[in-house]
Image (cartoon, rainbow over all chains, first blue to last red; front, side, top):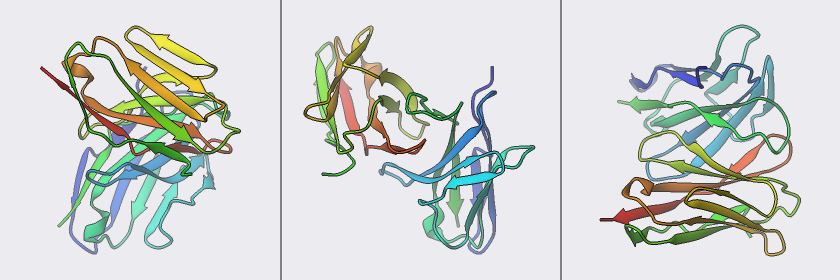
Length: 115
Length: 109
């Protein structure tokens, strides 16, 4: 029973390039969340998606960042024209559904480094 | 009051001791709460859920005080492997949850 799968584990990009981070939720989970964590800081919510819908993107920067969760395939967090400040760990989490009693389960994260 | 607030620590505690830390929250409508632990450079892992007055799992006890709007985590007979950052999580509306910044715990040999 695989957990939340994220890839790649580590991603290195040069300034101006694009970064694509992938997340496959746990089996049976239809809700996906993306978080960013800077070194020595807490988790910051970015976006919450269900299949083919963005439910809450209040934590997502208005420019260069986008997220999707297509009907088929993993959720993708896309960062265009990356800058040094985008270097962080990006975690994906999933949950089975609505309700406050549903904890989120996290993937191993993608460590993004911008040269 | 911030939505979720935790003492960042670090708490330096000798092995075998008991340690407790709190997390205060502002949304009185929150019904359930979670404690996660996060090891350095790893993903957060669910430690305990707190739905009513409290929950106990081995050496770990989580308690909820609705009147004062805080939850606590108590660790008895602490082990070196308990060293981590403990994150308090409070659901907001819908499925959005708010993470505290975490409390760092160092268990000393």
